[in-house]
Image (tube, rainbow, N blue to C red; front, side, top):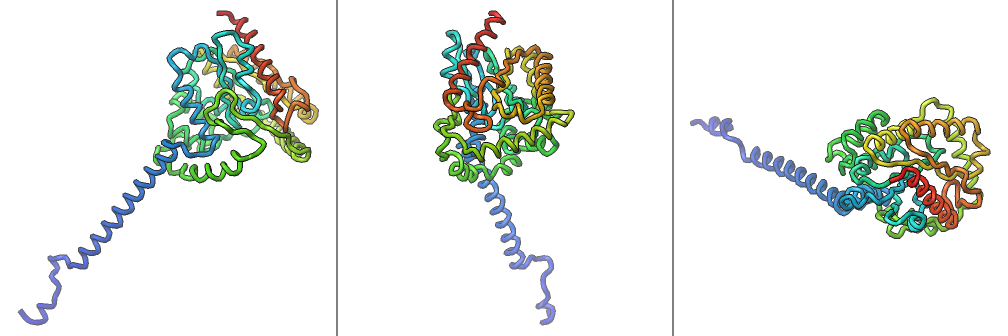
Length: 359
């Protein structure tokens, strides 16, 4: 063998440098894979296990767990009051129960900003719980406004399998494509998109749960008297809130189609078909809105809601003009005395309704 030949590389045998390169690439791939798996596992533990998330999402999960864990058929004596923060602030079930007959017990399942589509998410849970009555409290002024639901709520609902195929199909008719994907994406993708929830929990704890004008004790899983606002907003803040809402509602009332009303019709129909007794309540409205919004358009919206309920034989209790301006702490939430009065009034109305239906 000549000296020149001995220096030629052996092409049939990998060099040691190639081995080191391959080993290094493998280490990187394994590291990325293990790191990603650990990250997803940590997210799963924090979000689905420990449920470290903003309190309103935590309450949505608690409602699902509450309805799914009702003792067999004991819920036949239970009344579920659904609604937005108006119900959260406004219904004290201990007072409401004082107007009910023995054997009936009410639960406040209110959820902040909840619109009819929110309750389609929980429709399967409501049907399985089989209560004596479902009370759907409706904010008249939100019916014509946006029907969009928070993407994180949809992702969390999909991750926890809260809605069934029937409910997803119904929502698919009304949700924009992006929102529907948030509900139906693979679990790993939903979990990844929810990665900020533990951080948001910390931020909102400082911004919301420590507010001196609210009582949050036991809020997430408190279905009797969950949330109390303790102070009145300033006149300037009140005027700004009312003005902004009047402008939004006035603009929305010009639309010919109101998806919130259509989803409410779907909820009425579903409960009626499944044999779940239900009624609707039009929540108390601060009187200023009736004087600052076109009364003819507002009356037309109310009549459409009444017709929607009648189509499914759902009785409606109209409490919209029950209270004066002095009964409200802000544009929509009531002060303590009115809270008790509304709870008592609703209890008495429900008893009359149940007596009319008979055994």
